[in-house]
Length: 430
Ligand code: PEP
Ligand code: MN
Image (tube, rainbow, N blue to C red; front, side):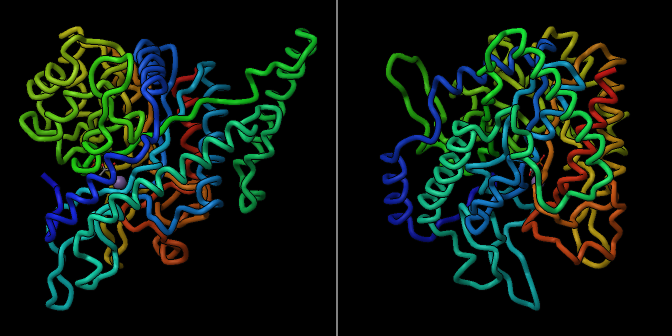
C-alpha cells in the first residue's frame, strides 16, 4: 500500500540498480548498538527521545536547519537526563524522512486532478502535472541528501558540538527572551557546577561528556528505496536496512498481511510500529508475534498515537494484553498524530494543550496498568515556526499565517518542544 506508480519502469530499474551500488548510510554495528540501548529503555534504564520533521525536503537540507534541529534535540535531552536521572537515547526523524503516506492517491484543485504529493523521495509538492509525476531519480537524490545530512550531523557531534562543557553551542538566536529560558539556564548552570566538581575529583577533564550518540530513523514507506539499501554484511547473519538505524512502519501500512510487515520481519534493525486507535488487542498481539517472534528487548517499539480524546478508552486494553502476554516491547508515545485538525482558514494544526494532554494521560495510563512509557516521539523543528497552537507564547489561529512552513504536518517550535521536555520531567522525574 501507499506505493507510487512509476510510469517508466526502465528508469525505475536503472535508479534502483544505482542505489543498490551506493554506499550505505549507517553500519550494522551502529544498528546493533542502538538495539541494545533500546532494550535497556524497554527495561526502564533509558528514555527514548525521537523527533524531527514530519517530512524533510531536499530544499531544507541546509546548514542552519540541520544544526538548529540538532540544538533543540540536545537541549531537550539535557532537560530529560537532568530531570529523569536517566540516560537518553537520541533519535532523529531525519536523513531519510522523505516519503509520506497520503489519504488519497490524487488531489483535485479547480477541476484539475493530479497525483498526490508523496514526499520529495517520490515527487514534488508544486501542483503541476510535470512535478507530480513520480520520478525515480529522486530515489538517488534522496540517498544523497540523507548522506549530506548524516555527514554534517556526524561531523558536528564528533567535532565537539554536543560537548556538555559548551551548552552555549546549542543556543538558538531567536529564543533569548523566551520565558522558558530562565528555567533552562538555571538547569544548565547546575549541570556545569556538577561537571566541574566531578572533573576536580577526577583531576582531569572527563572525555565521556564531550560527545553523545545520535541515531537516525524514518518511516520506511517506499519499499523500492528501503530494499535497495537492505544488505548483508560480512561476519553478520541476516539482513540489515542500512539506510537508517531505526525504521518504523506507519499506521496506514501496518496491516499484518501487508508488504511492510513482511519486509520488516526480515531485517535485523530495531524497528517500531505506529499503533492507532482502531487496532484491537488481538491484532496487536498477532503483529508482535510476526515482528518479534523471539521476544527480544530492543527489537520492537510500539508507538501509540491515539489522540487525547481516545487514549483513555483505547490504550489500557492494549497495554494489558501485551503485558499479560509477557511481551518485552518498548512503549513510546506520539502525542502528535492523533491530534491533527483542519481549521476553517485551511491550516492543518495541532493544539499544544491536546498534545500535552495526551502525553500526560499516557504516563498515568501506563502507571495504572503496570507498564512503562519509555519514550516520546515528536514532530519538531528548531525554527521559529507557527504551526501548532498554544504553548508558552499562546499562539493563536491568526498567528499561523506568520510562519507556517511545513509541507505536511504541523511541528512544535523550539519553545513548545522544550516545554514538552519539561512536562515529561514533571510527570516521570518525580
Ligand atoms: C508520521 O509520523 O508523520 C505519520 C504519518 O504518522 P502515522 O503513521 O502515525 O499517521
Ligand atoms: Mn507527520
